[in-house]
Length: 354
Picture 1 (tube, rainbow, N blue to C red):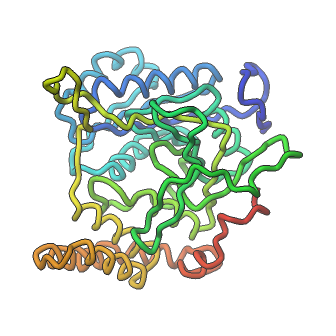
Picture 2: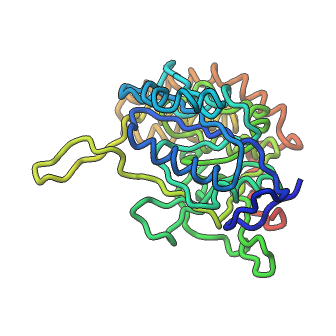
Picture 3: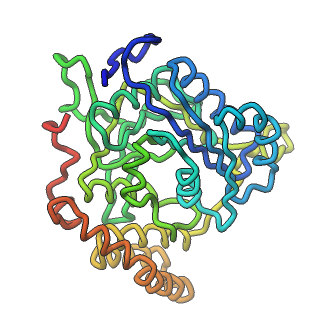
C-alpha cells in the first residue's frame, strides 16, 4: 500500500492508504467544549477522505453530554456507522474509559483524543501515513490554545524513578534533524502526552490496552508506552504535526470583577495518582520499580501516619490486582528483556531506528 509523504495537499483518488479511523473521545462534564474536538477532527478526516467513526465515551457525566450527543447526531450519524456513544460509569477513569471505547471500535487505527483539543490540518493524516510506514504508537506535537505555535511539546523527559511518568520537553533531539531526508524529524521517544495518540487497534488489543485497575487520572502514559516498548513496539513523534490543548477548561464561576474561574468537570486525589503510578511501575517493571515509587510517595506524605498507612494499603492491593499483568508482560517481553535492561539501553534514543 502506497504511503503519502505530502501532508498539506489532499490527493483524493490517489493510492495512498486510507485505513478506517476510530476516533475515541473520552469526556466527563465537558459539554459544550467537546464540540471543538469533534468538529476539528471531523474536518481533518473528511478533508483527506478517510473512512471513520466517532466513539464518544461518557465517563460519569452529569452534564447530559451523552444524551445531547445522541440527540444531535444519533440519527443519520448512527445509521451511517459514524457514531457510537458509550456510557462507562463503573468508575471515574480516563484509561478504563478508553478501553471501553476501543471495545466498541471497528477501525484499523485508534485515534485517542481528550474532549478539549483542536487539530491542525494534516496532523492526523501525517500520523496515519507515518504509522502505515513504521507501525508503533504515534504522538503529535502539542501546544496550548494560548501559546505561540513554535512552543511545542515534543516528548516527555522520563522521570521513571520518581513517578513512572515524565515532564514536558519542548526540545527537538539534535539527531532527529536530518536535512537530506525528506521525512525530516520522525523520531522515536520514550513517551509523550496522552492528550492525543494514534496506534493500530490490533496493536492496542494484543497489548491488552490499559490496566483495568487504573483510577481517575495520571499514570496511563508511562504504563502504555513502557509496556509497548517492553513488548517491542516503538513510540514515535512526528514533529511536523500539531494539536492544541485547552489548559483552561470550562467557565465555572464568575468573579466579582466579571472575569471567570475555569476548571475541568472532574478531579482526582493524591492517593489515586499514587495508586496509578505504583500500578504502572509494578505491572511493567516489577517489585523493585514499585518500591522506588512507593518510597517517593512516602516522602510526599511528610510523616503523616494516616497517609502512609493508606499508601501502604494501596501498595499491597496493587500486588494482588497487578500480578497477572506483571507476569504476562514479563513473559511477552521483547527478547526477554527486563525493565532495568531496557531503561539502561534506552532504545527510544537510537537514531538508527528513524
